[in-house]
Image (spheres, rainbow, N blue to C red):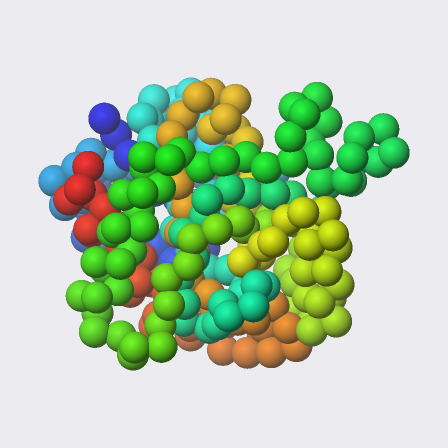
Length: 242
């Protein structure tokens, strides 16, 4: 079974691409898809690009054109929940769209015609990803304060980068019954497409900022020097477990 590994940015996936064996690039839907083997497993590496629509397009292409059997997303996110700090890792249990609001026709956050606001990640694949994340972080000998979290992640088509906006978003989601750990821009779209196709999906995000007024500071350096190393270690352990 081929595993698709998605990231939003090239810097997040560069380390994995450099390790890809027998790489073969296929251009499709305006995107580059890299087919090959990674740690003994057949994989397709691709960039979701940024935002929900772009991520959905990439996901459909992976399923329809490349016939992948599972999708794993790795990248960065802003920490939104209490106790989620820069450098921590969040493995998603489910995704909600924080900018979905078709009220009053449908309840806020509910995706119209689905009857649900959350799209749950595959239980078995996510359990493996939690184990792989723990093993990967242990292998990097990181500071003891680095934490691994597992819970709800929110996606939306805006980069949350202000303290006031972050507080407002956390409060609104909380009032809707969604205690969110992190915020990003792609995962909910991938989760919804995988739900439609019945495909296993799991996601892990390294916290690059606290989604506040410092969210833009040294972001490129963090992605290159920290998040990409986390991704390599986590994916290496995950592929060995499959």
